[in-house]
Amino acid sequence: MRFIVCLLTLLMPGLALAGPALPPKDADWAVQQDSDGIVVETADLPGSDFQAFRASTTFDVPVSRVMAVMAHPQSCMKWVHNCTAARNLSGTFRDRFAYSVNDMPWPVSDRDYVLHVLTRGEPGSGTVEVRMSAVKGHHPKQDGMVRVTKSDTLYRFTPVGNGQTRMTWVQHTEPNGSIPSWLVNSLLVDIPFQSVKALRDVVHEPRYAGHRLVFHNGKLTNVVKRPDDSGDDAS
Image 1 (cartoon, rainbow, N blue to C red):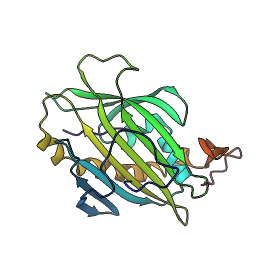
Image 2 (spheres, one colour):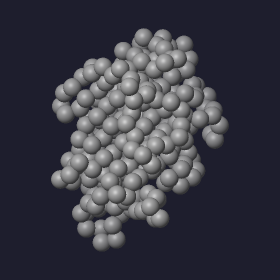
Image 3 (cartoon, one colour):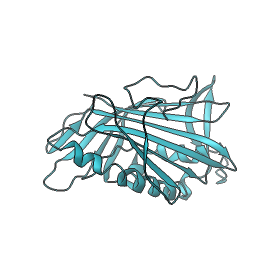
Image 4 (cartoon, rainbow, N blue to C red):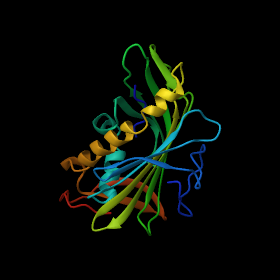
């Protein structure tokens, strides 16, 4: 059984996004896997029986190209493990609501989410952060699915030179239903590892090339295809 949401414990001043708590800066992260350029850690979260995970890696593409993937809801099915559906419901690039579904093996019911997605960027450093928080409402409950209402995710994408991007992904989810926490916690390594590994391939798909980040009055407002459609990337 695998639980994941489709789309940093150290936040830069001015980039911190308000939202439910993730593990604090001084959380006791334990490395569970370090292979193929991907590090996955887990940590306890006070007040919850379910652990959080933190996954990090470096992509050989600029932030703009990674954000082109993140802004495309249907990419979820390509890289987020067991994501079977994803779409935007309403809002803008900076502040929107989205819906996603995760396939679960019988006899466990599929999980679905309504996510409040906030995206912020810093024009000086080029760092972009995306926070996703599960919320109630905004989409009718579906027969045969369990709605997840407690899930918090934070992605951070930081330029590190040579056209590369450092990704850090922190997530904590309580999947609802009668699923024991020990079982969920036992799966917290494979899920992000396989997802990040798949994302590393997806960001190289031609459709995500040639994008740029758009800032207006110092605020990140969109990621768009360059007018010349040359395929060259820009941070």
